[in-house]
Image: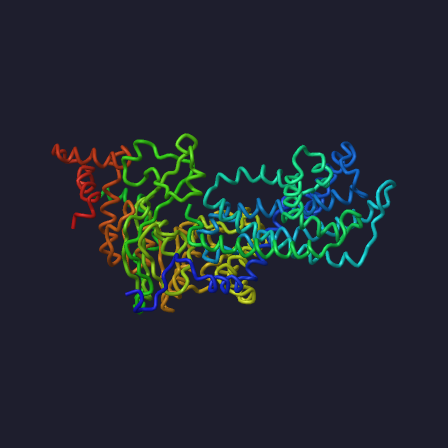
Length: 293
Length: 334
């Protein structure tokens, strides 16, 4: 009888193409949701939106103090402040995309159970809202990088034409992060326990990606065979997080060890597209189940 | 039965404004919603059904599908946590036509809200299917949009989520604020609203999109008299435009005033489905029977009353006790 009157069945996953079209139609919803959550994040503080910038600065300051000054692990780097600040700011974007993406479905059950829309809106807008908070932080990051060059003992930093590539690197990172958020949203929505592990995994990724100090020197001193060193070095150097850190650093700083590299740009684009497509499909395949548990 | 009637007024939340009102007739058209043997099962992670509860039919330990990832994640679960399943809706089927206005009644925990969510497409069914024309729009008192954001932003988000364009939302903004009657509060975060204000705003938002199927979950209970009149007019609008309205309410008089057909749900099953007065009369009898004679509380009281009746005691509560058994067996009793 349902067919006779042209009724549509609810709760079936729409075909991928239709799903994408529906999602595109919701772009303004994604945008408004992202900007308002970005704004609401710091609204209950006296300093308000200033925290979007203060928070990463304080974070970076701690790492500069401990690793850059007290432990001095960055002797191979010309300007360790710039190195750490870029690393911390960019990694924070990745990390908060993972944690935010993980909660984008499991933490919003109330909203999901009251309104009907393509669920992919949630992870996309989560990452978009993080991007919105990142942009003012990026400006501050650039200023810190420049100013750090005037401190005696640190390599001087100049504004070069390469700086113009920063938006491209951030855009690739944004696509990559959205893919990550898709995967995390699906995984945590099905198995909430994994939410507890994310913190530890991200800490391993942080130290394994050269966020605070370059890994090359440590790899040389490791007590393993040459072959293993080559493999491990390759993995550490070309894994996505390290690639994106490399891209941003190669745009902003003039470290001798980080020259512009076409290979890295190609890899960055590849990782971004790969994660986005795979993540989107993974997320879409669970579409009809979100909000049930 | 005079005493029983006096109590019933309280139990059923009869509201004087709604008494003696009846839902207006609207043209009834083609089917717009077909529900076929619908089952909904909640999965509750981290809470093990107790032994006693397992014996019951509604809550039982979940049988997890043996997908590899899940098996991996669930290894050793027996000792670390549990997954319970709540079988909230158990095999409900019905068909709804354009222009009908349907009330869903039932005692607390009978599966009304879950049924509503499932037919709104928000809770995936465990089995069975829901076929629908158009996009159903559900609004419930629990439907928190974004409590930390202002009413203004919530109107935008809610409107966009319902599929309006930003321009359409702006056009209807004043109308929504006026309908909700919250005035300048619209610029304050929604967490500062009273529950009545929040419910009114949500109703205003979800009915602003003029949906084909409007579902209302207890949302009218918190409004004042003026708001109720406005919402009733809005519901009539929807029905006149060949839309369909679902209303879940504990207030029988509201259901009688707004609905043309009533579904009575009990323990996830459909007990009765028919014209408003037939069903509500039977439902009233049932609820009356649940009411304790004196203050003995809940169903136990009803059964105790039943025993009294067997003993031949002719008290005011005895009649109610007798009906309790008839009501509880309502699926079979004619």
